[in-house]
Image (cartoon, rainbow, N blue to C red; front, side, top):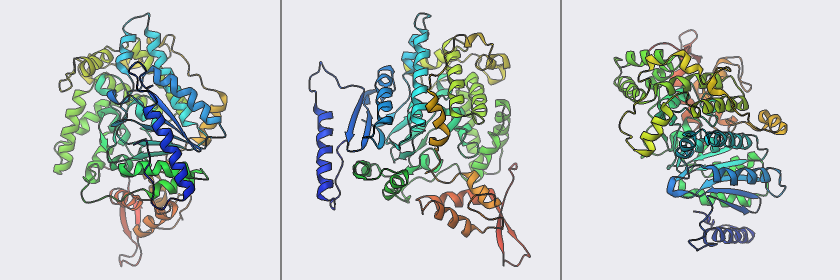
Length: 501
């Protein structure tokens, strides 16, 4: 996987570059054969103007631990200022990009007052690294060719180019273990279309393959077998401008095929999702889901039933904390969100809820993953406002001694200019809605037809793969047809307001 496959038509200079790539990769893979000198948990590679970090703990799905953070940050900071580095790439060894943070080690440190500060410091260092990646002034490409969850999503979420493959498995599953979606999840999940981010954050639901691209977390989808060739092409680029990288990645994209499973969160089911998860109170979400169980559509009814079953398995405290965090995060900057999440993580480490220990023990120690852990409180109805305030209130005793993220003023100033996560992704629902309503920067204040809507976004995004499919799905769900005069001579789209099914 680390040695790129050559195009048959590669020039002699390109072939020499690829030969150097092989040599570097072979040095990485075979530099040490001694059992006394194990490979480091993160490998680093230089290939012309591309700098690559390679997560290298495949036996534990590249779970992010303290030694990995220690290796990653200085190297990323070095590359960010080096004139020799034009593009940064993140990839991995094995069947996972990164399955999350090492919560078992965090729990061990939390268990003793003497080591609790180490657990909190882990979160601080992890969130700081995420922010550094988000504010890079150079193109950053993350290859999500496998499991990408929790802390792994944090490493990838802020990349200019987030590339999914058929092997990608994405989730923010923290409510399963009595925790909440962190690493900026309150920020990037709240900015997905509609209430998808709320739904995925509370349920811990898994999205696979092309669907990770469709929902907007990934910016591109390419078959896994093409990844080595893409990496070789990126190294050979003379200009590393983001527009050039975007068009290069797009060359490797593939249309969906009949063999792929259809995306299920569409149509009436998606409307039900947005309606039920629009609330700021967990109780009201449950009420709507219970009502949808009796829906006339079998698909909506079954989705609501399964969603209720899933939510009942999750930590009730985590559900309420996660919902409040994602609502607050939607109105915050990324730095503000990460600091809020560090506060929440500190409260968990300080024992604001016993569910953190209960969940990690059940999931990673006893591994009784099919059983509902002994959450306390056991029901969301018993999770009081006082309990939730332990994670957010400034005067909460559980936030005593919470650290402040150490971010330079230079990086703070780069968040607005450098952090544009949706720039190369499929158009968002908000963008499509703005075009229909006439408020989009590239639109007009006159009515627009469905064909014109599709054509507009295909032109804006240079016929990006998947644009037509996305625009049509949103239009079917969010628009209604207006026919002035009723003769069919001018039929245009009107954006619908949300309504109950």
